[in-house]
Image 1 (cartoon, rainbow, N blue to C red):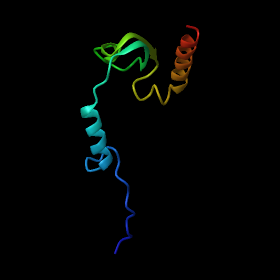
Image 2 (tube, rainbow, N blue to C red):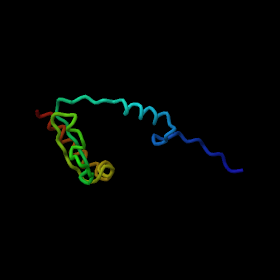
Image 3 (cartoon, rainbow, N blue to C red):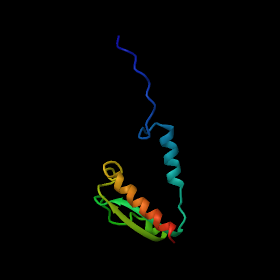
Image 4 (cartoon, rainbow, N blue to C red):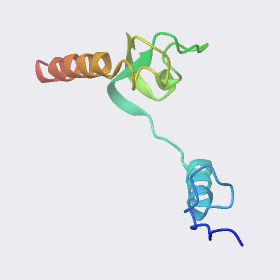
Length: 97
């Protein structure tokens, strides 16, 4: 007979996972409150969305959109340095106010 296969833990994408069930339960019941301050949205320039702010304007009084190279995935992998630079600039901006 073949070698015994080692059991693998379920992934978040596994529909039978208790973690997936808890995640779905949380997102279905979460109602975000309006944020009275300013937020920065850092998004990949190649991420296509009908809403440049990705919908955050419906939850915050002031939204700044900052574009970095790449799409949703490559902006945080291949272009992580650009994301870090933009994030540092945003943080410096909050400290100078």
